[in-house]
Length: 283
Image (cartoon, rainbow, N blue to C red; front, side, top):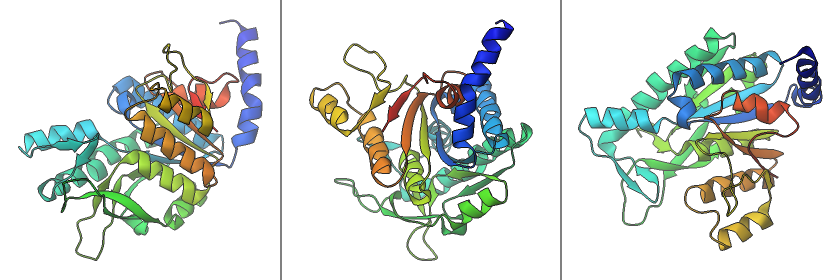
């Protein structure tokens, strides 16, 4: 790459840096970026750059593969229904140990190593988010939750203090003796983004974004186009609730939502600071 190309890239990013400085962004971290060492380090460098540019970042993570491995080791069966993990009572302690323990602290450590000041917490800390038992047909008495309340006070204090909150998707439940709930991290990211009126919510996935019937990337999509593509059977499966959640964010004060390919190195930087972007923007 010659010096002319480098200068053009830097100049292209300048208006985006000016636009996003001091704004709040919620980033859902998952997929290959969460298990591949090179992508982990790339993600940490990207977040450190956002941090040093004055962008206020809140990271929300799950950790399904690590949870699966732990439950297999403990010989606790995993059950899924419509893509949702049914977290039984005997699994809840292990799920929380993995998500709020090893996964959360590893990510916080990566970020700190690259110059960002990260603090690992869960939804239980500071009463950030409360949940109730999710209604799942034919199943009751489980610990898979849906969020009923969000209090972003602690998150805002951490951001004001110059820290990056790294939030695991464990919510507190009803009463002081309740074990809490395991909540889908996509939903957690959306609810936090809504509560904080974030400028953006960004989802790292293992797909290029939203694809059309020919498998080509749709760079931007709105409510009407989403409904049409669902009706035509182009958008199916797990992408439907993800986009629905994004649209719900937009309706509740979040300016834009992005679904990007976390398998691409520095995908966050490419999406935010280049004119073309690389993923799908929901607006």
